Each structure stands twice: as structure tokens, then as C-alpha cells.
Image (cartoon, rainbow, N blue to C red):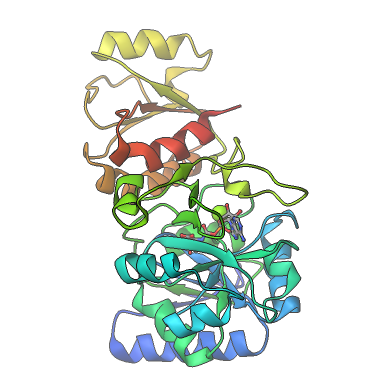
Length: 341
Ligand code: TXA
Ligand code: MG
């Protein structure tokens, strides 16, 4: 991908050590100057700014069109930096960090005074994550401050899992997109509130309940709105949605799928199928996309598939229902939200 004058954003590749280093330098310079840049992480691409600079964080809200009551995660690259963001670092947070950091887990802890109000939406806690992607780690270390980074999409749209997805939605609004390849996890981190007891899962992710339980021993699942600040707006029902209408369906064979599709009131030529087990062989649909029947593979691929369907002008995306099992919970959660009207 190359810089396009139409899009505004400069796109920097990272596939040699020289390019990687040049991109780290450029991103760090912009972040130090209070700017907002898109960076790769292992979950989804993030829209990053200096987490300690309220004006830079305000710009993140503006670029995304994000409601002010939705707090943003601070990304760190050492345990010491994580502790600096917290007024109190629970013992359990240490154990969880030991088990899962760096990685796709966000810990909600009581916030330190140096964390600006705007980052936490005025709330008493801050979400902290130590991502495993080497690029964002290098930038955080070079900057020396934590990075505020929500997913690099417009509010309520599908998160980006490659640089092209970011370019499409935000290319005209930001100066830099760093291309760190396809996101390897593919959906957003698990958000776990450890400021309460027992700890509470605010957003399911690929670090699932069973894995967390081996460390925490107990767990509460689901979010609760407290006061004015939403406990985790990622838990709002309608979220992570493509432009097309998303329908979850179960079918046995082509005829079964076609008859269900005909009831949706849209030409089959405008319907895209995403399947993992019963792969249709009919030519009636706009496209048939196959993702392996495996939760990790599914998480990695699903957002890119939804972006593709939107790009192709899909009116409806029919996704084959997922198993009702713990390992599938996070992807099922995202699809259920996208399907809710
Ligand atoms: O994987 C991820 O978490 C990605 C990458 C870029 O790190 N980031 C991400 O950020 O998904 P965002 O802003 O799209 O989602 C963050 C979620 C939101 O649902 C937000 O409400 C919740 O985390 N959150 C952040 N801080 C919180 C806090 N102090 N208390 C409760 N929920 C919080
Ligand atoms: Mg998001």
C-alpha cells in the first residue's frame, strides 16, 4: 500500500528492520507532538495518542465520533508503566499480568491522578493493556508514556484488522497509518474489571472465562451500568456492526439456506454468505466465504470478511450460527451485537 494524496494519511510499512525503525521514529515524533496515529496491535488496529495529554485524547474522540461517556484503554509496555497508571494495583492484577501480558487482556483498575478525566470518561477506573504486537511495544517504549488507543474505526463500526481497513474509514482524518500486517487475534481484547470483587468480565475476548478462572478462582460475567458512566459501552447491544444487515442462521443444505434467504426480502444476489461447517455450493448468492470451524481462525478472519462484504455493497450478510461453547463465546458475542437491530 502506498501513500495516496486523496486519502491524506501516510502509510508506512514495517517489513524490514530498517522500515520498522523508521516507522517507529515517525510515529513517536507525531505522538510526542500531540497527534493521533493508527498503529497495529495483535487484536485490532488502534487509534493512538498520548494517554496523559487531554488534548490529544480529545482528538481521538473527535476522529472516531466517539461518545464522551465511553472510556479509552491506556496501552503500556512494562508492568511498571501499568502500575503508574493505577492508584492501587490489586494483587490479582499482578497474577493476571503474569499469566496473560503481553496479550489481549485489558485490566480495569482504580486510576492514578496522572490519568486525565477524559480518558476514563470521568470515572474512577482506568483500563490498561500491555499489547504483544512488537510495533506498538516499540513505540510505547520510545515515547515513555502510555498510549490511549481505541480501535481505529468510526464509532460503532467494525474494527480494523489491517491497514487498508483503517485507511477506508479514517484515512482523511489522520496523518499516519502504520502497516503491521493482518491482526493475529482479530477481535478486541477481553476487558476484565479487577477494581471489584469478584472480578467482572465487561467484554468477552479470546482470553476466555475458563482461562481467567484458572487465575482468579471466581468471576462475574456481564456488565452493569453504574451512575452516569457506562461500565463498558462495548457491552451496548448494537455495536461492531457492518453497514449491511447481519443475520445469523442455521442451515442443513443449499435448499434450506436458499429458502431462509428468500424470506429476508432481498435479492439473493445482494446476500453474502459466511459459512464454517455447511458450505453452500449454490451460485445464487453474491458470494460464499468460508472460515475454518475453529474459534481462533474465526476471530482472525471475521472482521475482514465483514469489511469485504460492505465493500462489495452487500445488503445482507448471512453468517452460519456458531456453537454455544465457551471457546466461541467472544466471536458469538460480536456477531450477536452486529445482528441486533
Ligand atoms: O483489543 C483492544 O482492546 C483494542 C486494541 C486497540 O487495544 N482496543 C479497543 O478499544 O477495543 P475500544 O475503545 O474500541 O474498546 C475498549 C472497551 C470499551 O468497551 C470501553 O467501554 C471499555 O473497553 N473500557 C475502557 N476503559 C474502561 C473502564 N475504565 N471501565 C470500564 N470499561 C472500560
Ligand atoms: Mg472499538
